[in-house]
Length: 342
Image (cartoon, rainbow, N blue to C red):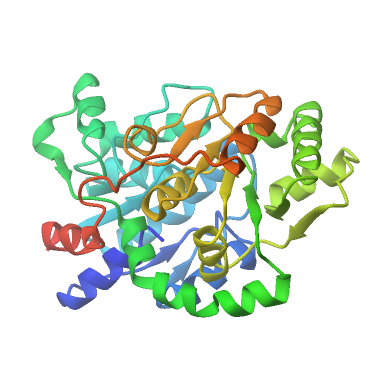
C-alpha cells in the first residue's frame, strides 16, 4: 500500500525501477493478493526470505539483497515503513554507498521494546532522504540529530492507495455485505506480539470481545500469527465472533468504510480510519502515529483488555470523535516522492 503510489509515480516519469519482494511477508493472503489488487507489477525479484527470528530474518534479507544492489547499481533504493526488510536493505546500501530514501520516516512510539522502533531508529540514522507523512516526524528527527536538509514532508502514501481504490472498494461492498449478512458490526484486527503472544492477554481480549458480541456483531479477520497463537494455547474463540481469513486490500477497506468502530493494534489501520472518519480504538500503550489521535479519530486504550468494553459501549451509545484529515493526506504523496527522486 505504501509502495504502489511511488511505483506508479516513477513509471509515469519514465524512471527505470526494479521491484524487489524480500519475502518477509510470504503468505499469499498477506502478499500476492496485494500486488494484484494494487495494480503492482509482478516483482522483478523475490528473495523468498520467509519467517524466522528477527536476527535471522534481517540477516537473510541482507545476504540476499546485497548481490541485487551490486548487480543493479541503482541511483536510489527506496525502503518503506519499519519492518525487518526496511532496516536490512538500509544497512546493505549504507555499506555499499548507495543512497536510501525512507518512506514513512520519523515515526516514533518511544517504546524500544517494539522491534519496529529499533528498525525505525537505525533506518533514519542511515538514510539519505527522509520522507515524512506528518509534521511531528520532523521534530522527532531533529531531536535525534538528523540533518534536516535530508527531511521532506510529502504526505502519506497509504492514503494515496486508499483514495485511488476506495471507489472500487465501495463497488464490492454490496457483495461483501450480502455474503456476510452485515449490518451493524465492529471490526477487529490483532497481530502485535504484545497482544497475541501472551496466552493470558490474548484470552482476556477474547473474553472482552465475547462480552461485546452480546450487543453487536464482531467481525475478526485473523492474522496468521494470531491464528497460530490461538491454536497453540488452546484459546477458545467465542462462538458469536465471526472469524474470517486474512482479507485482501479491497475487502478489508470496504469493511472499514462501513463499520461502527475498529479495534486494532495496526499502525496502518489507525491512519486509514482517520481518513475515513471511522472511530478507532487502538489496543496499545503507545502509537508512532500521534497525528491520528491529535487530528484524527483514533483513541489509545492502553494494554488492559478490560478497557475494550466501556470504550466500544460509549461509541455505540452515540459518542463520535471529531476528527479531520491531516495535511497532505490528499492522494498525491506518491507523485511528490517520485518527483523528488527523479
